[in-house]
Length: 117
Image (cartoon, rainbow, N blue to C red; front, side, top):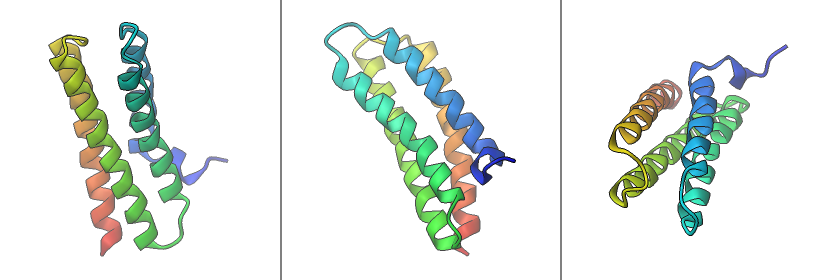
């Protein structure tokens, strides 16, 4: 038996991004805990909001949680931008992670649109 959220491809990608974010966090220098904490919280928020949305019964509730997850996706991308600008993350790595976030964001947008009808 699997939970509804576990059946969603976007959930699986979001879980993978949490692992990617953890790799970024592990490589941040000391003194950058504020970036580490924010990235970890935002990445985890994507996963948790997808799971909570999938567990809701009404389409309106599902859409609201998927929209929150999409916001956390954008927040994660912004933290990566800051890391790149501060030269804490190589441009190529940042682009790779942001491409994954863009894919997640597009999938969440589709879910929101489906459930807003």
